[in-house]
Length: 120
Image 1 (cartoon, rainbow, N blue to C red):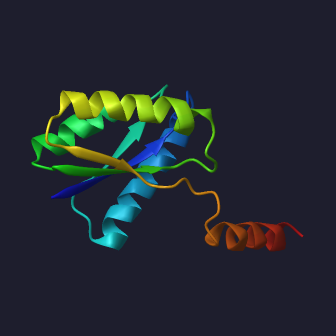
Image 2 (cartoon, rainbow, N blue to C red):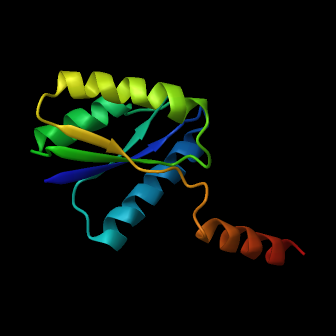
């Protein structure tokens, strides 16, 4: 069974974290996925360790981390691979994969176009 984790940076502003949680809920509903969790790198809970623990307790043996980051910056290049390696060591038999960040997805241009049109 596969679980999904929407992984965001996290903020000291609670409403920003709530927004990520809302996106996770919308992903769960729109995709028909039962096992979808939110996780944060810092400043909010749960962290990735907590989200992975929850999914593995539900029997997930494959977890896909969906970075809610625009670009492949330092957190995705350095921090996330280190965290994932540690989690895989802590959860033998569980495969943790990381998808691409949002950068490069064609929908981003459409979103920016929509924002530009509404502002102009």
